[in-house]
Amino acid sequence: MGILDLADELLRIILEYIAAEPEKPISLERRAYLSQESFKLPAPQEPDQAETIAAFRLTCRKFSDLGVIHQFSRVTTRFSRRGLARLERIANQPHIAGRVKKFSYMVPFFYVEGREQVQELLRTRPDSLGLLDVRHFQQKVNEQKEIVRTREDARVLNLSLKSFTSLQHVQILRVQDREDGHLISYIRQHAELNHLVELRWPPALGHSAKTVGQALLESRSPCSRFSSPMLSPQSVLGAATTPALTLSVLATRLTCLELHFDDGTDLDIRMRQLSSLSKAVFTAAKNIEAVHIGFPSHRPLTLRLEEIFHNVKWDKLQAFGIQAWRLDAEEIIGLAQRHRETLRGLRLRDVLLKDGSRWNEILPYLRDNLTRLDWVSLRRIDYEKHFDEQWILGAEVPDDPLVGSDSSDESEDWEYDGEHEDPPDDHGSASASGSGHDHDASDGSIADTDSDAETDEPEQGGTIHFPPMPDTPASITWCNCNGHDMDSVEALGDDGISVTNQQRKFWEKWVVRKICTEQHGHK
Image 1 (cartoon, rainbow, N blue to C red):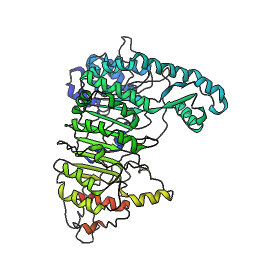
Image 2: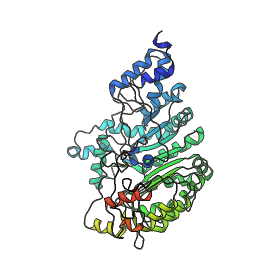
Image 3: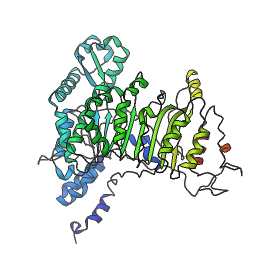
Image 4: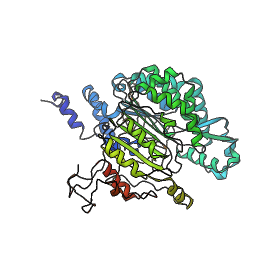
Protein backbone atom coordinates (compact mmCIF):
# COMPACT_ATOMS: atom_id res chain seq x y z
CA MET A 1 0.00 0.00 0.00
CA GLY A 2 1.52 3.32 -1.08
CA ILE A 3 1.14 6.74 0.52
CA LEU A 4 -1.23 7.85 -2.22
CA ASP A 5 -3.60 5.10 -1.16
CA LEU A 6 -3.99 6.62 2.30
CA ALA A 7 -7.26 8.37 3.09
CA ASP A 8 -7.30 12.15 2.77
CA GLU A 9 -8.11 12.43 6.47
CA LEU A 10 -4.91 10.58 7.40
CA LEU A 11 -2.83 12.64 4.99
CA ARG A 12 -4.22 15.84 6.55
CA ILE A 13 -3.07 14.64 9.97
CA ILE A 14 0.41 14.06 8.56
CA LEU A 15 0.40 17.50 6.92
CA GLU A 16 -0.46 19.15 10.22
CA TYR A 17 2.93 18.08 11.57
CA ILE A 18 4.60 20.49 9.14
CA ALA A 19 1.88 23.14 8.92
CA ALA A 20 -0.20 24.77 11.62
CA GLU A 21 -3.90 24.10 11.47
CA PRO A 22 -5.64 26.94 9.60
CA GLU A 23 -6.90 29.40 12.13
CA LYS A 24 -10.45 29.02 13.31
CA PRO A 25 -12.58 31.84 14.68
CA ILE A 26 -13.20 31.83 18.40
CA SER A 27 -16.83 31.62 19.44
CA LEU A 28 -18.48 34.84 20.53
CA GLU A 29 -18.85 33.86 24.15
CA ARG A 30 -15.07 33.66 24.61
CA ARG A 31 -13.48 36.64 26.32
CA ALA A 32 -10.77 36.80 23.66
CA TYR A 33 -13.36 37.57 20.97
CA LEU A 34 -12.96 41.33 21.16
CA SER A 35 -9.31 41.18 22.15
CA GLN A 36 -7.23 43.80 20.40
CA GLU A 37 -4.39 41.31 20.28
CA SER A 38 -6.46 39.64 17.58
CA PHE A 39 -5.77 42.56 15.26
CA LYS A 40 -2.13 41.59 14.94
CA LEU A 41 -0.89 39.54 12.04
CA PRO A 42 -0.24 35.92 12.97
CA ALA A 43 3.43 35.00 12.88
CA PRO A 44 4.44 34.06 9.34
CA GLN A 45 5.45 30.53 8.61
CA GLU A 46 9.11 29.69 8.96
CA PRO A 47 10.86 29.69 5.56
CA ASP A 48 11.63 25.97 5.76
CA GLN A 49 8.01 25.22 6.68
CA ALA A 50 6.70 27.23 3.72
CA GLU A 51 9.16 25.52 1.40
CA THR A 52 8.19 22.10 2.73
CA ILE A 53 4.50 22.77 2.12
CA ALA A 54 5.29 24.12 -1.35
CA ALA A 55 7.35 21.00 -2.14
CA PHE A 56 4.56 18.83 -0.74
CA ARG A 57 2.07 20.48 -3.10
CA LEU A 58 4.37 20.00 -6.09
CA THR A 59 4.40 16.22 -5.63
CA CYS A 60 1.08 15.49 -7.26
CA ARG A 61 -2.42 16.85 -7.75
CA LYS A 62 -3.74 15.07 -4.66
CA PHE A 63 -1.09 16.60 -2.42
CA SER A 64 -1.57 19.97 -4.07
CA ASP A 65 -5.27 19.94 -3.19
CA LEU A 66 -4.56 18.86 0.40
CA GLY A 67 -1.92 21.53 1.00
CA VAL A 68 -3.67 24.49 -0.56
CA ILE A 69 -5.76 25.23 2.52
CA HIS A 70 -2.58 25.78 4.55
CA GLN A 71 -1.31 28.33 2.06
CA PHE A 72 -4.32 30.33 1.03
CA SER A 73 -6.89 30.32 3.84
CA ARG A 74 -5.96 33.97 4.24
CA VAL A 75 -4.52 36.33 1.65
CA THR A 76 -2.83 39.64 2.35
CA THR A 77 -2.30 42.09 -0.50
CA ARG A 78 -0.76 45.52 -0.74
CA PHE A 79 -2.15 48.36 -2.83
CA SER A 80 0.52 48.31 -5.55
CA ARG A 81 0.80 47.19 -9.15
CA ARG A 82 2.64 44.04 -8.17
CA GLY A 83 0.35 43.26 -5.27
CA LEU A 84 -2.77 43.59 -7.41
CA ALA A 85 -1.26 41.48 -10.17
CA ARG A 86 -0.57 38.63 -7.76
CA LEU A 87 -4.04 38.97 -6.25
CA GLU A 88 -5.52 38.62 -9.74
CA ARG A 89 -3.53 35.45 -10.35
CA ILE A 90 -4.90 33.94 -7.15
CA ALA A 91 -8.43 34.92 -8.13
CA ASN A 92 -8.06 33.27 -11.52
CA GLN A 93 -7.42 29.85 -9.99
CA PRO A 94 -10.74 28.57 -8.59
CA HIS A 95 -9.22 25.70 -6.58
CA ILE A 96 -7.16 28.29 -4.67
CA ALA A 97 -9.56 31.24 -4.61
CA GLY A 98 -12.32 29.10 -3.13
CA ARG A 99 -10.14 28.42 -0.08
CA VAL A 100 -9.65 32.07 0.91
CA LYS A 101 -11.48 32.95 4.11
CA LYS A 102 -9.71 36.15 5.19
CA PHE A 103 -8.54 39.00 3.02
CA SER A 104 -6.35 41.80 4.37
CA TYR A 105 -5.80 44.86 2.19
CA MET A 106 -2.73 46.85 3.15
CA VAL A 107 -2.82 50.44 1.98
CA PRO A 108 0.05 52.96 2.05
CA PHE A 109 -0.29 56.71 2.57
CA PHE A 110 -1.45 58.52 -0.57
CA TYR A 111 0.55 61.39 -2.04
CA VAL A 112 -1.59 64.53 -2.17
CA GLU A 113 -2.28 65.73 -5.71
CA GLY A 114 0.12 68.54 -6.62
CA ARG A 115 2.32 67.79 -3.61
CA GLU A 116 4.34 64.84 -4.82
CA GLN A 117 7.50 66.68 -5.80
CA VAL A 118 9.82 64.16 -4.18
CA GLN A 119 12.72 64.89 -6.51
CA GLU A 120 12.59 68.60 -5.67
CA LEU A 121 12.47 67.81 -1.95
CA LEU A 122 15.46 65.52 -2.10
CA ARG A 123 17.41 68.06 -4.10
CA THR A 124 16.54 70.75 -1.54
CA ARG A 125 17.51 68.73 1.55
CA PRO A 126 19.91 66.01 0.38
CA ASP A 127 21.96 65.90 3.60
CA SER A 128 18.99 65.66 5.96
CA LEU A 129 17.22 62.91 4.04
CA GLY A 130 20.21 60.65 3.68
CA LEU A 131 20.45 58.13 0.87
CA LEU A 132 16.78 57.88 -0.12
CA ASP A 133 16.37 56.63 -3.68
CA VAL A 134 14.67 59.32 -5.81
CA ARG A 135 13.78 56.81 -8.51
CA HIS A 136 12.09 54.53 -6.01
CA PHE A 137 9.90 57.35 -4.66
CA GLN A 138 9.00 58.65 -8.10
CA GLN A 139 8.08 55.15 -9.21
CA LYS A 140 5.70 54.82 -6.27
CA VAL A 141 4.12 58.21 -6.97
CA ASN A 142 3.55 57.36 -10.63
CA GLU A 143 2.26 53.89 -9.83
CA GLN A 144 -0.19 55.18 -7.26
CA LYS A 145 -1.62 57.74 -9.67
CA GLU A 146 -1.90 55.20 -12.47
CA ILE A 147 -3.76 52.64 -10.35
CA VAL A 148 -6.31 55.23 -9.24
CA ARG A 149 -6.70 56.74 -12.73
CA THR A 150 -7.25 53.41 -14.48
CA ARG A 151 -9.30 51.92 -11.62
CA GLU A 152 -7.09 48.86 -11.79
CA ASP A 153 -7.56 48.26 -8.07
CA ALA A 154 -11.35 48.30 -8.40
CA ARG A 155 -11.22 45.82 -11.29
CA VAL A 156 -8.98 43.36 -9.44
CA LEU A 157 -10.91 43.67 -6.18
CA ASN A 158 -14.19 42.98 -7.97
CA LEU A 159 -12.72 39.90 -9.63
CA SER A 160 -11.11 38.64 -6.44
CA LEU A 161 -14.02 39.04 -4.07
CA LYS A 162 -16.26 37.33 -6.59
CA SER A 163 -13.80 34.42 -6.76
CA PHE A 164 -13.37 34.16 -2.98
CA THR A 165 -16.54 32.13 -2.52
CA SER A 166 -15.68 31.15 1.08
CA LEU A 167 -14.66 34.64 2.22
CA GLN A 168 -15.66 35.47 5.79
CA HIS A 169 -13.63 38.50 6.78
CA VAL A 170 -12.21 41.63 5.11
CA GLN A 171 -10.00 44.20 6.78
CA ILE A 172 -8.25 47.36 5.64
CA LEU A 173 -4.87 48.07 7.21
CA ARG A 174 -2.40 50.93 7.04
CA VAL A 175 1.14 50.11 5.99
CA GLN A 176 4.35 52.00 5.38
CA ASP A 177 7.84 50.89 4.45
CA ARG A 178 10.95 52.20 6.15
CA GLU A 179 11.66 54.87 3.52
CA ASP A 180 8.10 56.19 3.55
CA GLY A 181 8.26 56.34 7.33
CA HIS A 182 11.48 58.34 7.18
CA LEU A 183 10.00 60.75 4.64
CA ILE A 184 6.72 61.21 6.55
CA SER A 185 8.55 61.83 9.81
CA TYR A 186 10.84 64.38 8.19
CA ILE A 187 7.98 66.32 6.59
CA ARG A 188 6.06 66.43 9.87
CA GLN A 189 9.08 68.03 11.47
CA HIS A 190 9.43 70.57 8.63
CA ALA A 191 5.96 71.89 7.88
CA GLU A 192 7.42 74.48 5.51
CA LEU A 193 8.05 71.66 3.03
CA ASN A 194 4.41 70.60 2.80
CA HIS A 195 4.04 72.50 -0.46
CA LEU A 196 6.50 70.06 -2.05
CA VAL A 197 5.43 66.72 -0.62
CA GLU A 198 2.52 65.60 1.54
CA LEU A 199 1.41 62.06 2.33
CA ARG A 200 -1.96 61.52 4.00
CA TRP A 201 -3.83 58.51 5.30
CA PRO A 202 -7.47 59.72 5.01
CA PRO A 203 -7.50 59.85 1.16
CA ALA A 204 -5.91 56.39 1.04
CA LEU A 205 -8.46 54.92 3.43
CA GLY A 206 -11.37 56.69 1.74
CA HIS A 207 -10.43 55.40 -1.69
CA SER A 208 -9.77 51.87 -0.46
CA ALA A 209 -12.93 51.65 1.62
CA LYS A 210 -14.97 52.75 -1.39
CA THR A 211 -13.42 50.25 -3.81
CA VAL A 212 -13.62 47.39 -1.31
CA GLY A 213 -17.22 48.24 -0.42
CA GLN A 214 -18.27 48.36 -4.07
CA ALA A 215 -16.50 45.08 -4.73
CA LEU A 216 -18.26 43.40 -1.80
CA LEU A 217 -21.60 44.60 -3.09
CA GLU A 218 -21.09 43.81 -6.78
CA SER A 219 -19.56 40.42 -6.11
CA ARG A 220 -22.35 39.42 -3.72
CA SER A 221 -19.62 38.20 -1.41
CA PRO A 222 -20.59 35.99 1.55
CA CYS A 223 -18.23 38.06 3.73
CA SER A 224 -19.92 39.08 6.98
CA ARG A 225 -17.07 40.61 9.01
CA PHE A 226 -15.27 43.90 8.48
CA SER A 227 -12.55 45.54 10.53
CA SER A 228 -10.07 48.37 10.35
CA PRO A 229 -7.92 49.37 13.33
CA MET A 230 -6.84 52.78 12.02
CA LEU A 231 -9.84 54.71 10.70
CA SER A 232 -10.08 58.42 10.06
CA PRO A 233 -13.49 60.05 10.48
CA GLN A 234 -12.83 62.26 7.44
CA SER A 235 -12.37 59.19 5.27
CA VAL A 236 -15.51 57.53 6.53
CA LEU A 237 -17.47 60.70 5.79
CA GLY A 238 -16.91 59.92 2.13
CA ALA A 239 -19.14 56.89 2.57
CA ALA A 240 -22.01 59.22 3.36
CA THR A 241 -22.31 59.86 -0.39
CA THR A 242 -22.92 56.16 -0.99
CA PRO A 243 -26.58 55.44 -1.82
CA ALA A 244 -28.57 54.48 1.26
CA LEU A 245 -29.67 51.21 -0.33
CA THR A 246 -26.05 50.19 -0.93
CA LEU A 247 -25.09 50.84 2.70
CA SER A 248 -28.18 49.00 3.88
CA VAL A 249 -27.37 45.90 1.83
CA LEU A 250 -23.78 45.78 3.10
CA ALA A 251 -24.80 46.44 6.70
CA THR A 252 -27.45 43.72 6.62
CA ARG A 253 -24.78 41.14 5.86
CA LEU A 254 -22.60 42.12 8.82
CA THR A 255 -22.24 39.82 11.80
CA CYS A 256 -19.09 41.43 13.18
CA LEU A 257 -17.82 45.02 12.96
CA GLU A 258 -14.57 46.13 14.63
CA LEU A 259 -13.38 49.69 14.10
CA HIS A 260 -10.86 51.93 15.81
CA PHE A 261 -10.90 55.65 15.02
CA ASP A 262 -8.07 58.12 15.31
CA ASP A 263 -7.61 61.72 14.28
CA GLY A 264 -5.08 64.37 15.07
CA THR A 265 -7.62 67.06 15.97
CA ASP A 266 -11.32 67.62 16.60
CA LEU A 267 -12.18 63.96 17.03
CA ASP A 268 -15.47 64.80 18.77
CA ILE A 269 -16.57 67.16 16.01
CA ARG A 270 -15.67 64.73 13.26
CA MET A 271 -17.38 61.79 14.95
CA ARG A 272 -20.53 63.87 15.46
CA GLN A 273 -20.54 64.47 11.70
CA LEU A 274 -20.70 60.70 11.30
CA SER A 275 -23.80 60.40 13.47
CA SER A 276 -26.35 60.09 10.66
CA LEU A 277 -24.16 57.57 8.84
CA SER A 278 -23.70 55.43 11.95
CA LYS A 279 -27.46 55.47 12.49
CA ALA A 280 -28.09 54.19 8.97
CA VAL A 281 -25.50 51.43 9.28
CA PHE A 282 -26.37 50.26 12.80
CA THR A 283 -30.10 50.31 12.11
CA ALA A 284 -29.64 48.14 9.03
CA ALA A 285 -27.19 45.75 10.72
CA LYS A 286 -29.89 43.47 12.07
CA ASN A 287 -27.66 40.38 12.03
CA ILE A 288 -24.81 41.88 14.03
CA GLU A 289 -23.37 39.58 16.71
CA ALA A 290 -20.24 41.47 17.76
CA VAL A 291 -19.37 45.18 17.74
CA HIS A 292 -16.29 47.08 18.85
CA ILE A 293 -15.85 50.84 18.41
CA GLY A 294 -12.71 52.37 19.86
CA PHE A 295 -10.78 55.65 20.14
CA PRO A 296 -7.27 56.59 21.32
CA SER A 297 -6.68 55.86 25.00
CA HIS A 298 -5.08 59.26 25.57
CA ARG A 299 -7.90 61.14 23.84
CA PRO A 300 -11.26 59.68 24.98
CA LEU A 301 -14.39 60.67 23.10
CA THR A 302 -16.84 62.94 24.92
CA LEU A 303 -19.95 62.35 22.80
CA ARG A 304 -22.87 60.60 24.40
CA LEU A 305 -22.98 56.91 23.61
CA GLU A 306 -26.24 57.13 21.70
CA GLU A 307 -24.89 59.81 19.34
CA ILE A 308 -23.09 56.87 17.75
CA PHE A 309 -25.40 53.92 18.54
CA HIS A 310 -28.80 55.72 18.40
CA ASN A 311 -30.60 53.41 20.85
CA VAL A 312 -30.44 50.58 18.32
CA LYS A 313 -31.19 47.12 19.70
CA TRP A 314 -29.50 44.15 18.04
CA ASP A 315 -31.42 40.96 18.68
CA LYS A 316 -28.38 38.75 18.05
CA LEU A 317 -25.69 40.77 19.83
CA GLN A 318 -23.39 38.59 21.94
CA ALA A 319 -20.19 40.65 22.32
CA PHE A 320 -19.98 44.43 22.65
CA GLY A 321 -16.91 46.57 23.18
CA ILE A 322 -16.00 50.24 23.37
CA GLN A 323 -12.71 51.95 24.11
CA ALA A 324 -11.80 55.41 25.40
CA TRP A 325 -15.09 57.16 26.12
CA ARG A 326 -16.27 59.65 28.77
CA LEU A 327 -19.71 58.47 29.84
CA ASP A 328 -22.42 58.67 32.47
CA ALA A 329 -23.40 55.48 34.26
CA GLU A 330 -26.90 55.60 32.83
CA GLU A 331 -25.54 55.41 29.27
CA ILE A 332 -23.75 52.13 29.91
CA ILE A 333 -26.69 50.71 31.84
CA GLY A 334 -29.07 51.73 29.05
CA LEU A 335 -27.14 49.88 26.37
CA ALA A 336 -26.69 46.84 28.61
CA GLN A 337 -30.39 46.85 29.42
CA ARG A 338 -31.33 46.66 25.73
CA HIS A 339 -29.17 43.58 25.25
CA ARG A 340 -29.51 41.90 28.64
CA GLU A 341 -31.02 38.75 27.12
CA THR A 342 -28.26 38.05 24.58
CA LEU A 343 -25.02 39.70 25.75
CA ARG A 344 -22.29 37.23 26.71
CA GLY A 345 -19.27 39.51 26.62
CA LEU A 346 -18.83 43.19 27.50
CA ARG A 347 -15.70 45.26 27.07
CA LEU A 348 -15.38 48.77 28.54
CA ARG A 349 -11.73 49.57 28.02
CA ASP A 350 -10.47 53.04 29.02
CA VAL A 351 -14.01 54.15 29.87
CA LEU A 352 -14.10 57.15 32.20
CA LEU A 353 -17.16 57.95 34.31
CA LYS A 354 -18.21 61.58 34.47
CA ASP A 355 -18.80 63.47 37.71
CA GLY A 356 -21.92 62.19 39.48
CA SER A 357 -21.63 58.61 38.20
CA ARG A 358 -20.16 55.64 40.06
CA TRP A 359 -18.94 52.23 39.00
CA ASN A 360 -20.81 50.73 41.93
CA GLU A 361 -24.00 51.73 40.09
CA ILE A 362 -23.05 49.96 36.85
CA LEU A 363 -21.46 46.75 38.12
CA PRO A 364 -24.38 45.55 40.28
CA TYR A 365 -26.74 46.11 37.35
CA LEU A 366 -24.53 44.01 35.07
CA ARG A 367 -24.23 41.29 37.69
CA ASP A 368 -27.93 41.08 38.46
CA ASN A 369 -29.48 41.61 35.02
CA LEU A 370 -27.13 40.23 32.36
CA THR A 371 -27.78 36.60 33.16
CA ARG A 372 -25.87 35.24 30.14
CA LEU A 373 -22.75 37.35 30.70
CA ASP A 374 -19.64 35.13 30.63
CA TRP A 375 -16.93 37.78 30.70
CA VAL A 376 -16.40 41.48 31.22
CA SER A 377 -13.25 43.49 30.52
CA LEU A 378 -12.60 46.70 32.48
CA ARG A 379 -9.01 47.41 31.54
CA ARG A 380 -7.92 50.92 32.59
CA ILE A 381 -11.37 52.13 33.56
CA ASP A 382 -11.33 55.18 35.81
CA TYR A 383 -13.07 58.40 36.76
CA GLU A 384 -12.87 61.38 34.43
CA LYS A 385 -11.59 63.81 37.07
CA HIS A 386 -8.78 61.50 38.17
CA PHE A 387 -7.76 60.81 34.55
CA ASP A 388 -7.58 64.54 33.78
CA GLU A 389 -5.59 65.25 36.91
CA GLN A 390 -3.09 62.57 36.01
CA TRP A 391 -2.84 63.97 32.50
CA ILE A 392 -2.11 67.45 33.82
CA LEU A 393 0.61 66.01 36.04
CA GLY A 394 2.21 64.50 32.96
CA ALA A 395 1.36 60.88 33.60
CA GLU A 396 1.16 58.85 30.43
CA VAL A 397 -1.42 56.21 29.64
CA PRO A 398 0.59 53.01 30.23
CA ASP A 399 1.06 50.39 27.59
CA ASP A 400 -0.59 47.04 28.13
CA PRO A 401 1.58 44.22 29.43
CA LEU A 402 2.94 41.57 27.11
CA VAL A 403 0.72 38.72 26.05
CA GLY A 404 0.19 36.25 28.85
CA SER A 405 1.71 38.46 31.54
CA ASP A 406 -1.60 38.70 33.34
CA SER A 407 -3.66 35.57 33.65
CA SER A 408 -6.85 37.51 34.15
CA ASP A 409 -6.55 39.82 31.18
CA GLU A 410 -7.07 39.36 27.50
CA SER A 411 -4.10 40.36 25.38
CA GLU A 412 -5.40 43.36 23.52
CA ASP A 413 -2.92 45.80 22.01
CA TRP A 414 -3.88 47.70 18.89
CA GLU A 415 -0.33 48.75 18.15
CA TYR A 416 1.90 46.43 16.15
CA ASP A 417 5.36 46.66 17.65
CA GLY A 418 8.57 46.26 15.71
CA GLU A 419 10.06 47.32 12.42
CA HIS A 420 7.49 47.82 9.69
CA GLU A 421 9.36 47.27 6.50
CA ASP A 422 7.73 46.85 3.15
CA PRO A 423 10.18 45.65 0.49
CA PRO A 424 10.05 47.44 -2.88
CA ASP A 425 7.83 45.60 -5.30
CA ASP A 426 10.71 44.58 -7.54
CA HIS A 427 12.53 42.80 -4.72
CA GLY A 428 9.98 41.31 -2.37
CA SER A 429 6.57 39.75 -2.21
CA ALA A 430 3.48 41.90 -2.20
CA SER A 431 0.75 39.33 -1.99
CA ALA A 432 0.27 36.09 -0.17
CA SER A 433 3.95 35.34 -0.03
CA GLY A 434 5.62 33.87 2.99
CA SER A 435 9.04 33.46 1.47
CA GLY A 436 9.60 36.91 0.05
CA HIS A 437 10.25 35.51 -3.44
CA ASP A 438 8.26 35.61 -6.60
CA HIS A 439 9.33 32.64 -8.69
CA ASP A 440 6.43 31.76 -10.93
CA ALA A 441 5.76 28.17 -11.78
CA SER A 442 6.31 27.26 -15.39
CA ASP A 443 2.62 26.74 -16.00
CA GLY A 444 1.79 30.28 -14.99
CA SER A 445 0.18 29.31 -11.72
CA ILE A 446 0.79 30.91 -8.35
CA ALA A 447 4.42 30.78 -7.22
CA ASP A 448 5.08 27.52 -5.44
CA THR A 449 6.79 29.31 -2.59
CA ASP A 450 3.68 31.36 -1.94
CA SER A 451 2.01 30.85 1.39
CA ASP A 452 -0.88 32.46 3.18
CA ALA A 453 1.47 34.78 5.07
CA GLU A 454 2.65 38.18 3.90
CA THR A 455 6.10 39.70 4.07
CA ASP A 456 4.61 43.15 4.48
CA GLU A 457 3.46 44.05 7.97
CA PRO A 458 0.78 46.64 8.64
CA GLU A 459 1.62 49.73 10.61
CA GLN A 460 -1.47 49.11 12.68
CA GLY A 461 -3.29 45.87 13.22
CA GLY A 462 -3.41 42.69 11.20
CA THR A 463 -5.48 39.62 10.56
CA ILE A 464 -7.99 38.90 13.30
CA HIS A 465 -7.37 35.43 14.68
CA PHE A 466 -8.85 35.61 18.18
CA PRO A 467 -6.20 33.76 20.20
CA PRO A 468 -7.31 31.78 23.26
CA MET A 469 -7.22 33.58 26.57
CA PRO A 470 -4.39 32.78 28.98
CA ASP A 471 -6.82 32.28 31.83
CA THR A 472 -6.21 31.08 35.38
CA PRO A 473 -6.44 27.26 35.48
CA ALA A 474 -9.64 26.01 37.04
CA SER A 475 -7.62 23.88 39.45
CA ILE A 476 -6.14 26.97 41.10
CA THR A 477 -8.42 28.36 43.80
CA TRP A 478 -8.20 31.77 45.31
CA CYS A 479 -10.01 33.99 47.74
CA ASN A 480 -9.47 37.49 49.07
CA CYS A 481 -12.73 38.01 50.87
CA ASN A 482 -11.60 36.79 54.32
CA GLY A 483 -15.05 35.36 54.89
CA HIS A 484 -16.89 38.61 54.17
CA ASP A 485 -20.06 38.79 52.10
CA MET A 486 -18.59 39.24 48.62
CA ASP A 487 -22.02 39.48 47.00
CA SER A 488 -22.59 42.91 48.51
CA VAL A 489 -21.92 46.18 46.67
CA GLU A 490 -19.73 47.28 49.56
CA ALA A 491 -17.27 44.54 48.62
CA LEU A 492 -16.38 46.55 45.52
CA GLY A 493 -14.69 49.23 47.59
CA ASP A 494 -15.51 51.92 45.03
CA ASP A 495 -14.56 55.36 46.41
CA GLY A 496 -15.84 57.28 43.37
CA ILE A 497 -12.42 58.88 42.91
CA SER A 498 -10.14 56.43 41.12
CA VAL A 499 -9.88 52.77 40.17
CA THR A 500 -6.77 50.72 40.79
CA ASN A 501 -5.67 47.85 38.59
CA GLN A 502 -6.23 45.41 41.43
CA GLN A 503 -9.76 46.71 41.94
CA ARG A 504 -10.84 46.37 38.35
CA LYS A 505 -9.49 42.80 38.20
CA PHE A 506 -11.63 41.92 41.19
CA TRP A 507 -14.62 43.74 39.71
CA GLU A 508 -14.37 41.72 36.49
CA LYS A 509 -14.71 38.49 38.48
CA TRP A 510 -17.36 39.95 40.77
CA VAL A 511 -19.67 40.88 37.88
CA VAL A 512 -19.65 37.36 36.43
CA ARG A 513 -19.77 35.73 39.88
CA LYS A 514 -16.38 34.06 39.63
CA ILE A 515 -15.05 35.15 43.00
CA CYS A 516 -14.16 33.28 46.11
CA THR A 517 -13.96 29.79 44.65
CA GLU A 518 -11.82 28.44 47.49
CA GLN A 519 -13.91 29.07 50.56
CA HIS A 520 -17.43 29.61 49.34
CA GLY A 521 -17.76 27.94 45.96
CA HIS A 522 -19.54 30.79 44.23
CA LYS A 523 -20.22 30.04 40.60
